[in-house]
Amino acid sequence: MSQKKKPVLFNWLLLFALSLLLYEGLHQLRLPAALLLGPMLAAIILSIREKTVRMHNAYFQLGQAFVGISIAGQLPATVFEQVSSNWTIFFCGAMFTIVAAATLGWALSKSGLFPGNTAIWGTSPGAAAAMTVLSESFGEDIRLVALMQYLRVLGCTLSATFAGKYLGGPAAHLSNRHLDLFHISSPRDFAWTLAIIFGSYILVCVWKKPGLAFILPMIIGMAAKMLGCTQIVLPGLLIATAYGLIGWNIGLRFNRPILRYAAKLLPYILLSIFLLITVNAAFALVLVKWAGVSFLTAFLATSPGGADSVSIIAASIPADVSFVVAMQVIRFFLVILISPMLARWLSTPKTDTN
Image (cartoon, rainbow, N blue to C red; front, top):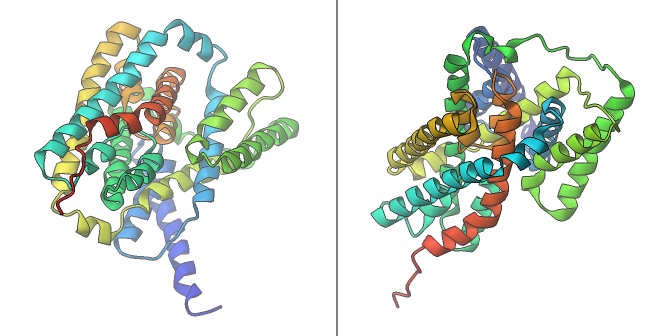
C-alpha cells in the first residue's frame, strides 16, 4: 500500500470509529435520529481538523435512495388523498417558507454585507446542491452559497432533533429502538425493494437530476406498495448505513478553508438561519390551528432543512410522517421551479464599472 493511501484509509477508519462513538453517546442521551447525527458530527470534526476524507457523490445519492424508499414503507396509502383534499394547506405552507427565505435573502443582499447577490441564492430553502450550482452560473460566489446552504441544513437538522427530543413526549425515542441489522422478513419483497432503489438511481443518473435521488424511489416505492406489487423490506444495517452516508455528506462540507474564508460573515449567516427557523416555527403555530396537527409535526413540516434529513427525524419521533414528508416534497419541487426565477427577479443587476 502506498504512503499516500495509508493516511486516507486511516482517516476513513477514524471517521467510522468516531461516528460509532458519537452515535452511542447520542443514543444514550436518547436523541432522535442518532444514526444521522453521530456520523454528521464526526464528519464535521474530521473535516475541520483537515483530515482528508473524500466521499463520492454517488454514495450520497444511494443513501438518499435507501432513505427515500424506507420512508415510503412507513407512509400510509392515504397520503395522496390527504394531500389532494388539503392541497391549499400544503401549498401555502411550502410557499410561506420560500417567500420568507427569499425576503430574508433580499434583505441580506441589500445590506451590502454579502458580495453580489450571494445571499439570495444562499438562503433558498431547499435543493441545496442545485441552488449552489445554479448560483455559479449567475456569477455568484459558489463557496459562500454552499456554506450558507449547508449551514442551513445543519442548523435545521439540529433544531428538528432537539424539537423531537423535548416536544415529542415520552414516545420520542423511537429511533433508539433495537435495529434488527440482518433480518429480512421477505426475500422476494427485499429483492423488489432493491430493484426499485437501483432502478431509480439509474434513472436519476440518466436524467442527471441528483435532487430526485431521495424523492423518486419514495414515489415509486409508494406506488408499488399501493398497487400490491410489493412491501418495502430493508434490513436495519442498510437503513443505518444510509443514515450514516447522509450524515457524512452534510458534515464533510464544513472544512477549515471555507470557514476561514467566510469568518467575518458567519455571525450574520447563523443569525439569518436562526431567524428563518424562528419565522417558520411561528407559522407552524398557524398550521396547528389550520391543519389540526401537533406543533411538532407542523414544525418539522415547515422546517427549511433538507427533505431527507427532516424526514429521517420525523420517522424517528411521534410526528405525522405523511404530513411532514408531503409538505417537504412539495416545497422541494416548488423550490426547483420557483427559486431560480425568484432569485433572478430579486437580484440586483451587475453593472459594468469599466
